[in-house]
Image (cartoon, rainbow, N blue to C red; front, top):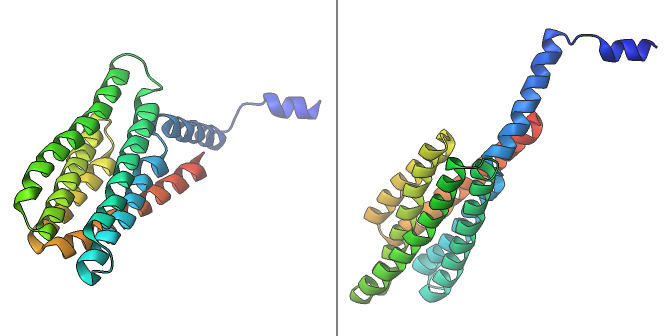
Length: 209
């Protein structure tokens, strides 16, 4: 009897606040997507791919083609994972305009990389090998930076926007500094930063849930 009375008593203001915060956290996880999929997938791709390019430029122990064969498949995989997670999180839970917006955003990634491939294939023939690798790296990171900022604006996610802006700044510095510096900045700066943000946000969401 006492247990029934305890279950039916009104919640205190503190208990009500905790209940609301828990519901908000769970809703945020559903609608915001999995941060490990959205951020850490890119981070791992850049840590490994641009790390391989840095090894090529600095030590010459692997060829450029070997390094690019690591980078671009991982970037394509990261693009697919993060686009899926973003659409599933932000648009998949809502019908109508939001769903269409998420689908168009996913296609923007595919078209952006397709255009990069066409342009890079033409221009890289006119450049020395290291400068050709720099061209591919700068173009690919430009697409990522711009679309991350656009995604942050679309879904009002400041973290996503400022990560894209940070990648853009590192990309410009690396483009001016040369292939080796660009590869290092993209691997450690962009890759490590995205992994750290993904893990921290995932941990915070788990604690709030």
